[in-house]
Length: 263
Image (cartoon, rainbow, N blue to C red; front, side, top):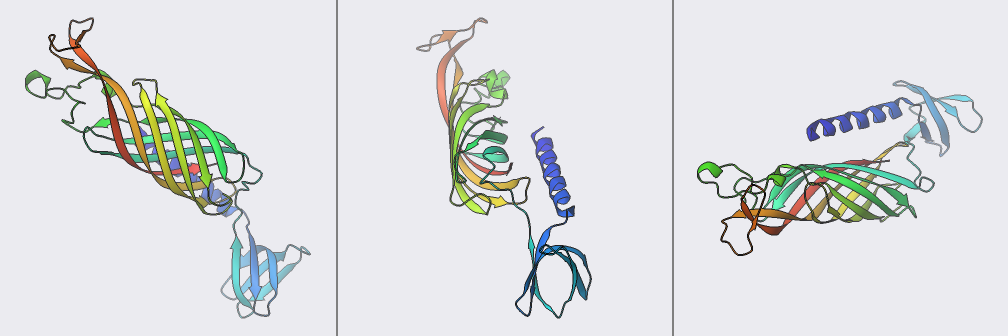
């Protein structure tokens, strides 16, 4: 499912980029005599470039001998006036240490930019939890009839953290810029625990519709679980089926690679 979402997001981003490229884009022709002509290039071949000058709306033709170089001015989203922010990130998380878990993930965040550099919002993520085989305490005793069974049935369900996010870009996001962010929250569905994730990354101002972000992050996720045990174990609790377990909690540490869109 997550692979399909990743593919769909890639197709959507590609379609928007292609659509933006089809629109006439502003350019500047820098002539060898020092003159700069700004406007929209309407035709171009090996010898002549035709441009509609934005100052007088007249059409001009320049030969390659007259031109020093052409600067194509791609229109970028103006983050000075656009205060609402939306982020959708896809990535892969690799477990550190034992016990560990590796998973694909989708993370979102929506909020408000108080300045072109500072953002505060809230989001929800889906971490497609995949326990590494025989990683204690995710699986109980693997011998005999217990082989392949989950220690706690809840491990088969994804983590769904809900969090607040603060983000700071070192330059105005209308240009390319590095950024740092921090997510803090918890999980309340399927699992219960604390969630925190600091990130560093780079923002690519792409076009007037959206931008791309890439980054790496560390994620801390805690979760409570049931450790099945014998009935005479200290602190053992009996469930409705007569089985006994201990209430435990576990911290998971992960490094993540992410790519996403911002709008």
